[in-house]
Length: 598
Image (cartoon, rainbow, N blue to C red; front, side, top):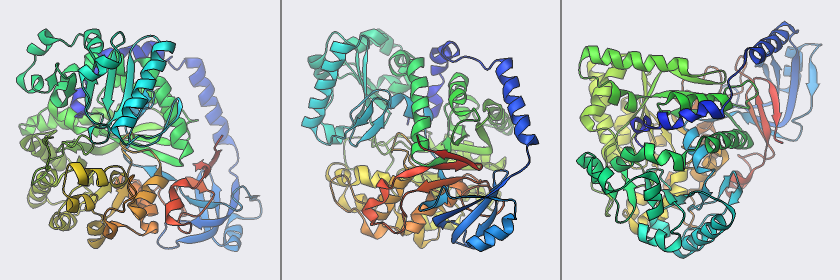
């Protein structure tokens, strides 16, 4: 992802959303309130459900035969006889789940709705298969195959559509070199933008550079750090250079109609894969974008909840915590974001997201021994700036989620957490090490001793480990990507996330990836880091809820918790391990509301 503070320029370009998205009228609001009032006045009904298997994720009772729901919560869990007795004589008995496997509603603690919406509405040509607005897009993992797909897509676009052509999914380690000259050789009349798989860089042909107004005169007026990462000769724009041109790229990448279409698509996609709660840590700091998301995700009919965590990186850039008074301004600005959510889309209080280093897919993570290739690591927040923001949020009692991919990025985080704990000790702070890909065993031991928790993406291994071993990092470090053996050894609480679109928003795929560690090349990378499947299932249910401080209400099937469920056609704890990702999802239950897939 881009450094979140860089998205502010999109606000003006996306103000057009006010035109594309109609407001909620007073009449609609009144009707909704009347409907809710009628529901509130209706007598509570109790429904008993039995299933072939009920995997509760409740340590006190891991398995059950049945459960009862009233007012959107579980009131009984246990054997059929126990639940029937607890439900009482007036209960309704529902056999909808007969023959099915019921698990707690899947929790996706780290997704990016705007990026997911915009990438899935482009021409997707990526290193793996994706479900897109236009249907299934097969993966391609070689240069010749990518060039052929791109050529056919450009030809089809030229024949059937007007306007610019945007494609997402290119990755140099699989698809070969990319340049302005190469794109000009394929298409000169139409603006062409190739969006990197990492979402951190772009390649533009000459027509696209002219269309956006990114020329030598514009680049000459930029600060040196941004000029250095805009190469007009090759058409490559990355890092700080991408920050400088976001507003110019917005008409190409983020037209309002595409954003709305993409958000509606992801709403269906998340439900299709059994998600009952999704969360964006470090959501884009743009009120128009938030309103667009609220419009799609916020209404009562949405089949999942969607929460947001404040973007501390962007906020700290606007309110540098250089003194106690400045730190207070940062916290006040963070607190004001709580009013940005609506309905089923809301901000989690007293939680914030910060960054240390760059990203795995762009290979800009910071490695202590270097990355072993020509792509240098980068800091998203300079270590001193990161520490100042970390300490300000720590002293204000926030739970801090930190993107730290490389072991050098983790070293910065460890130093800040150690200083904070020595200066102002806090118990149950649950500082989250998010997106960790590389960490030394000693670092994970220190992280555990400090009371940290982990949110990892095991799909990184499936997508990248084998190829990175060949072209970017050494074999040993590639095998140790996403080091789950160290997480288990130190009994660290952990969650799994997709970072959609960094990985498909499919919790079952994350379980599959963690259990098998099987790459796209057919290699098992780091068999010692394979984890038991029940632990992997916990990572997308109770562990994910714990990472968001929501475990008291969701994450397991237990009396008093919200009746959120994912219903499967097979048992992920029993099928062959390579079948897990292909288990069909029947649907979900959200607060007691049955939601079968269409």
